[in-house]
Amino acid sequence: MFKKYDVIVVGAGHAGCEAAAAAANMGSSVLLVTMNMQTIAQMSCNPAMGGIAKGQIVREIDALGGYSGIVADKSMIQFRMLNRSKGPAMWSPRTQNDRMLFAAEWRKMLEQTQNVDFWQDMVAGLLIKNDAVKGIRTSMGMDIEGEAVVLTNGTFLNGLIHIGEKHFGGGRAGEKAATGITEQLIALGFESGRMKTGTPPRIDGRSLDYSRMEVQEGDEEIYSFSYKDIPKPKQQRCCWITHTNNRVHEILKTGFDKSPMFTGRIQGLGPRYCPSVEDKINRFAEKESHQLFVEPEGWDTVEIYVNGFSTSLPEDVQYNALRAVPGFQNMRMFRPGYAIEYDYFPPTQLSNTLETKLVKNLFFAGQINGTTGYEEAACQGLMAGINAHNAAKDTAPLILKRNDAYIGVLIDDLINKGTEEPYRMFTSRAEYRILLRQDNADLRLTELGHQIGLADDDRLTALQQKRGAIRVISEFVRSYSVSPEEVNGVLAEIGSAEMKQKMKLDKVLARPHVGLLMLSQAIPALRDLLSAYTKETIESAEIELKYEGYIEKETEIADRMSRLEDIKLETNFDYSQLKSLSIEARQKLAKIKPTSLGQAQRISGVSPSDIAVLMVHMGR
Image (cartoon, rainbow, N blue to C red; front, side):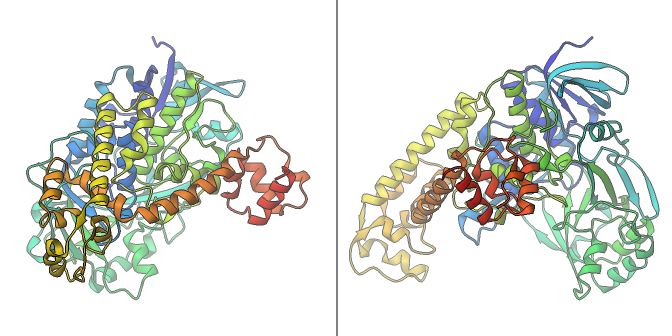
């Protein structure tokens, strides 16, 4: 019934969809197996993409030739560029999305991708021979052969849903859990653990009083995640902001004795930076209120997502507490919030390709690795799909370094440091933030995406045009001498000191709050030049010019650190023989088996003195 596939992807969430698309577009025959064909690319939690650091990841996925940015743009109902008041390294695009349209667009794109087949069934186990994966076994007893397998099981592995004192098996509301895989992997020698996440209640938007809330409009100027030319929405939907209060907190506290979090029924750790509302009022008892974001689920639905009110308290406690929130006094609930506990596998068991160390050609991506968030899952799926294809075709793997992309930072963190709580990406996790901006993801990654067969010719052409435009703008700005008479009026408007004599335009641009478009108002030659380019291209050129010194310094540091990546380590080296290493370093190095000195220095518990010992041993 089934042919032998190059790559089998298990699970059709954000990681699974990107993995299937990547492997297929690179030329592999792909089977995408999901328990429910109607929930492909479901936004299980909030109806949004991007955000701080996450927006950079979506742009990187798109620059490499992935689908998430295109789908997010096509289903966008609101756009905001976060952190505009900070430096450009911190700018992060974010969209509110139409939940149903997002899933529909993903399925449509996958169905239009050659080489992708679909099968609806639960995967109960893996076919393994001689420590290499050979395919999957489904719950209906079907064996399907594959050269490589990517597991993207999300929250479904032995998933357990909690609402108050009730708990029942499930991978998501209304969907059953997946069983069999965890038990088999443990028998093979894998280490597993439990994590938990949660979701808030969904509300009937017709029952809310928006006049008692603060409106949150989208940005007037809409940017895109994708570097492709995706039509932007002609209008946007509003979100709103409201707050909890002491009355809300008191009602929530009445359910604490039935909370699965506080009674110990939930063993897994939840996301530190997205805690449940009961956790917030317990940990921050001194705070009288917490912010809630009231987010529409789409263009044509009244369903509302209450961001900030994730909870697993009993339904009646959730209901009564929400009715005490301003604007929610007549609230009607569609379904309560819940917590879900699930199996994950500490990612130190993976190589930097996301292939498992114990089983050849078996890859993990997404929440199975202990991460949280659509964007974190999607980028792992993309890289796992790329490397599963490479493994199936016996070609060189693709590995992104920490100075290449946030994706590289995420994978490097996971495999070297592991995680004991759901891992979420932040800009603070990256040491090369000025290099890894959202505006230059294409400059960093599209050529690479084109080389491996993911980014199409149109993307490469657009990249070359952008590079050329940045070069032309930069040359003009560096060579053009501007007089005080030309720009002092503009400088005075923003409170910048007047010029006393002629100077090159790049020196003026280096001033705080001075931009190219602002200067073009007073300089006709600059205005004529910039009229040929998009605002995003102009912004990229401006950032490169204004922050040139910082960019050069970060590049120099990255180059210096990358030299340690060139010093290779044997993966089967016996670290116990180096008695000068600390005991912790010996244990961690033996467990993770780094492939280079650079990777070794990033392992938690390996100190600079341990690295010095390794260098001496290697004659360095």
